[in-house]
Image (cartoon, rainbow, N blue to C red; front, side):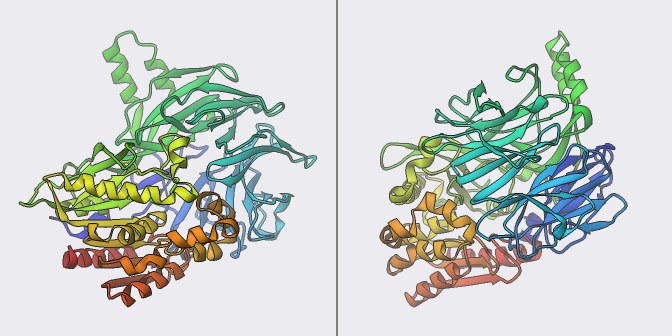
Length: 614
């Protein structure tokens, strides 16, 4: 058996970007936080390019120069700043506005300028800026003054226009084109109700591609005419979401991913015209989840990362000419071999010496809930089941507009190695199963999703492999609310609860969350103006007298999403009820625990807590 620290030091390589000289840049957490590294050849010796105590959040190569832009915040405050990194090692701060958030919007085609959205002017809204690569901070030109949550989808092929996306909620967006010469903004997606327009980007000849659920229950791949706003469906989502698309403006290559019950199916194709896509084979990737596509010069190569529950995250590069040639071969066996040989795994992130074959894959299951609906979940059991059954952690995702997928987690593998089972439900409100499913927990239906957790425990208690007296609720962010609500609504179900950066009181949460987020979250949870009484009634803090199970509360002092007061008040109130409570708050973390030393401290204490009470 390997100790916790070994599992937490299993590394991940992801977020790749292909440079104009063949260099692959990516993020790797070898130092304990993600930094920028580069490689010149598959499985070569990587070069570390940044050396910070804070994690780097993204990196993107210039299309024309051996330089890249990366982003980083401080202490998890999410006020990301932008920096330019030259391959000779020089780092130039580009934004230098530590009080504001900056959201990357892409390089112009010549690499001389870049765009971004920022809330410098007003914390609650995002404006759009354009800045020269040699300019710093105040030199940025504000090209659009926003009145909401705007982001930039990139420059058109002629560098005259920007795509803007305005988010009204996670399930409602609008798309605009901004003319940089005239300042005119054209609204392309007027609509009624809630419609998603995601992954919006330019393609060849100034066409726009995206995924949308307009008029449908699931996301489809669509073409959007930037002159008329007319939409044409290229691929229907049917039962499953097409949850992302990447297009290369120069070559017309297009990659989209389909989310099939949480697993990724990739499709690679060539745009023969604006709305006609011919596809060719994609090699199998390690693991079950893939994404983060980056195109190399002339569309010759594609970098992307993949992972699975038994495979830590790594970067692969696809040779596009080799894939095209493989598709012409007559014999299926030759074609399949040639397709697989067209993929090189570039990174080999360490598993800390833990054999990959020791990792345990989950089973995809479904259990019936109170209204007869079937809830999908991933269920994992340890190799050895004691007499009386194994303890099980019900691990609840955040969001709530999110989805638990079978990606890698060293912590989950550690729990399995220690004899804990895991149930990871995608209760109503989760994404990935259609808009109708996601809306089943909105506002007044919020507690129906908590009922789904109760029925998850009921399903577990019917398994001979599970000890019904040793079931733990664990979750983060909105999942932390779900933990607290499950402990107060169904107190006799639980042996313990672990609340990480969770919501204890929806009223104080909405009052104190970052002003740029409040409107987005009210669309999901209900508004302070119209729904205050209801929000009070479902807040776990107001039902704390029902709690019985020991509680561990974990939070970051700098959390801009769920302020640390949520942790402080629930811990204090639970203690007043005589409940055993352990609280751990890190002064250099935000919405989650990102730094390795902090993770080791936090999860060592959590394991000790579970050992004592479970």
